[in-house]
Amino acid sequence: MHAYDIFQEDVEPAIQVKLDEFKLLGYEKVNGNEIWSFLVKKKWRNPKSDIRLFEIVDEVLAIKVGEFINFSTMEVYRDKEFSLDNEDEMRELLK
View 1 (cartoon, rainbow, N blue to C red):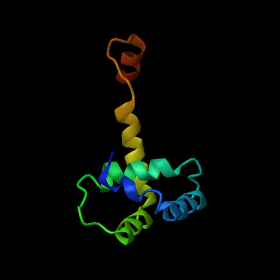
View 2: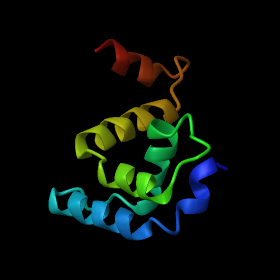
View 3: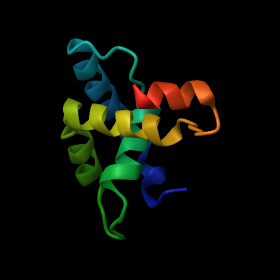
């Protein structure tokens, strides 16, 4: 549980605006939970105790598509299971 999770429902309209922007740029599979996860894991690693709702909305609307895509790509690499015990994966790595 993140300190800002109490604001998630309140900023849903701002998240929807950001999703519309992503769709306009061709990123139609992004969802609101992914945007929230990006903010929690990347932008809000050190939450402020006195943050206000308008500051959170501002940060949602300030997300840059490239920054989000880079973060998402790195998350996929972190989550991917990789083992050097698998001979096929080892050959693929050495190509």
